[in-house]
Image 1 (tube, helix red, strand yellow):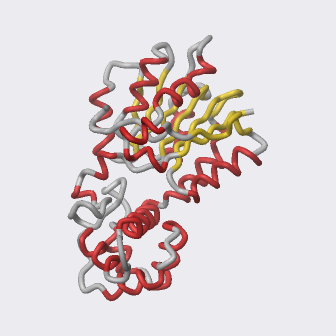
Image 2 (spheres, helix red, strand yellow; image 1 turned 180 degrees about the horizontal axis):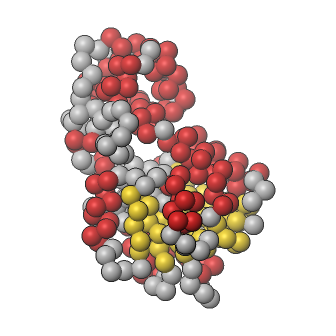
Length: 286
């Protein structure tokens, strides 16, 4: 475990990402370094290669800088959408391997003051970078009921989006995670856990512009990857998974690996709850 976070499918990812670098060292990109789990494993597996670790969250970035000081890992506090500029400005070579974990880290989920989880009371924030953008509380207050319903339906794939959006707009207070959770519970009959997870996911995606960031990443990935670069992307919901699937299938710059995707084994799902909804998409630069 790295910084309180278990990396998902570590063996499969390291083997795949590093497979083209076995004969000669190169550049490996971890575009979502998070707690440093995959980064650390890649550093150990490819000690003669340079690992470029990108982390959008300033608090996680500080811990990564300290952890990987003096190693073959170079850490940047930035979004993965900035990778082309980072590589160009620092004269890094084209990447021979890359990993992106699109899920929320256990560290963020278990930090109440970040506001990511309905399981912990905290400010309704949800920003990856709390130094920019608007917190979820402010954004939801500004949005119309229809805008909220559309976001919940699109990003959370929740069928009760209209009723939930109405309850959110009617909420007297929307400052804490409990306030949003109570609005959801007020219109959901039976066990509210899945609707809560879908709504919190939808709001988080909206606050951080996650699908827009992913679209930018995919459209520019050919600029910084070298021929035969293996790219592994962990997805956690159908929208992002479909975007990646279609890109690897239809892009003039990439092809799907065979097999095009992998799932965690039953033992890992039992040991790491976060892995249960994960799918590993595999692509290769032409």
